[in-house]
Length: 316
Image 1: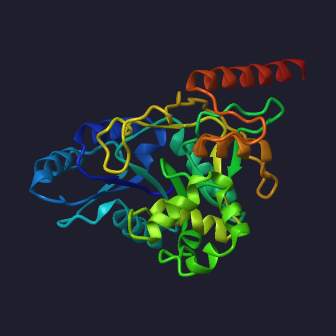
Image 2 (image 1 turned 180 degrees about the vertical axis):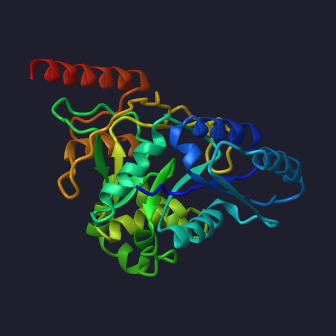
């Protein structure tokens, strides 16, 4: 199995960047992986010292098979940086694992992502692999380690060149889409906020690559493959980020499970109950009997699941 290159985007948070790199290097596959670091330029003179501090961190990066650093003179913003950087790397390698400067990882993050990329490359229903999963309780009768979601993952994710190249970054059919409530409702299966975010994007009020990546999943009737319990945590919701305020809504206890079962390509189906709970987490309203749960409860749920598996193994 050839390993996917890692693509890291950084801007003006040196402490977060250092922690992200240290966490990533705890993955055994880091030493066998190439990493491409894209450092965005300052927006103004106020950013120059912080950007310089970040660049001092990335200039000292070690622990990977090869390190390539790209420093932008001008500020491209996160959306422009991600679209350009991922496109550049994925054209050459055919696949990529993408991370940002405010993430923490399970030591098995890279193995999960690479294994899923290898297994599901030919399963066209799967458009991307996600590492973050919101703190949901899995249904008691759900026996898989991963699930399919309508919403993509932007916090530690991976994809293939043929999927990435299907994205229409201009969303040229937006006007027609807006006139069809059935299409809007289907798009919002990942959360009621999705259409609202897309409208803001198309009105030029925000600059989001993620919502357009979501729309590409929807247009291609495709899904994001995610672990049932998150193998990525985000430390950037502390008020230091450009796009997110301070919140603990997305906090998780990172799953350090070392061995995952991966269903055969084409076998895993969308679980309606999981996706009801998933949508409820993001849009803040109840869907059926589904409710989001706290990170602590998620840990309990994971423990119960693992204990159930152990009992099944003992009992044959």
